[in-house]
Length: 161
Image (cartoon, rainbow, N blue to C red; front, side, top):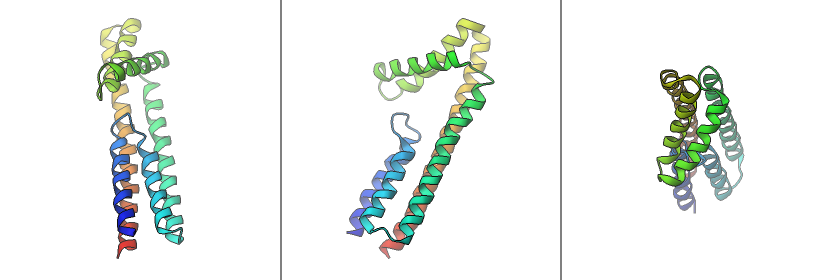
């Protein structure tokens, strides 16, 4: 049963790691859910408690960083109004263009909002700064999900052998 649980959990965690990059999937939550599922499959021993607690703490830290990094960076570039319009553009883009519509619509919405208020040159600069900040946040969340996945992999190897 441990081999079956390891394969299923590994697939779930892989989907979660990819979910940190693909905007439509809740990456960190899926990775932690995979770790909890593995703990349920293998029994709640001391390692399960340690790994699940560490995974949850890392995921919370990654989510907080994923929110704080863009918030501090965008406070120096695009305004809240532009970010809200970007969200609307992202939602529209999600339904118009599959897969890449969400980020494409978001960037377009931020740019158009900034261009309407401060001109195209300023809009390009503030949109680029906003995209960089969200990119940094995505990389931090990816690194956190990968760290959780590696921690789980080490635990899974000890369970298998």
